[in-house]
Length: 159
Image (cartoon, rainbow, N blue to C red; front, side, top):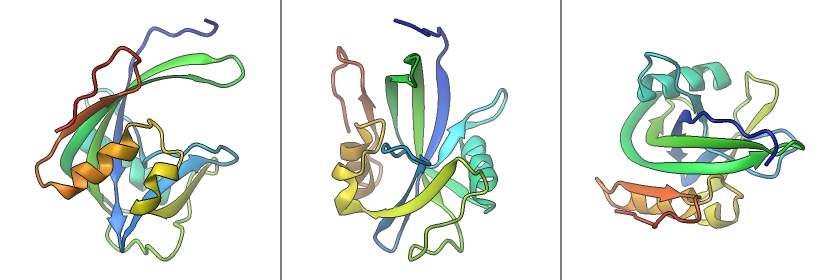
């Protein structure tokens, strides 16, 4: 496998639901989507990382709420098929003043944000793909936490 790296990325992601819609983003021109958030930096908590990333990406204050779950993800990216291995820590996310009737403007030119209805999540191309099933379950049951994986040999466990 070309471009194999031997590091694991720690990512903080947020589930922001307003007016029946959920905030997603993608790299411009890409078909896959992902939850807002980004890398946790050295000596930074995952919640603080999520709030920092929202401020950097959208220029808005945010509050990372309840821990929802974790999804490990392994994938190949780009023409060189660079291997990635990431652990996604997922939290509920409040962004005061965000309008679910308008796509928020990104402060980072490669990113584009948009709203999707929760009912459309299975068709959203959301990655890592276990989130498509896990998010509705996490939102349905207060206190339900779960785990998902894109590893072929991982047992599927949700709570």
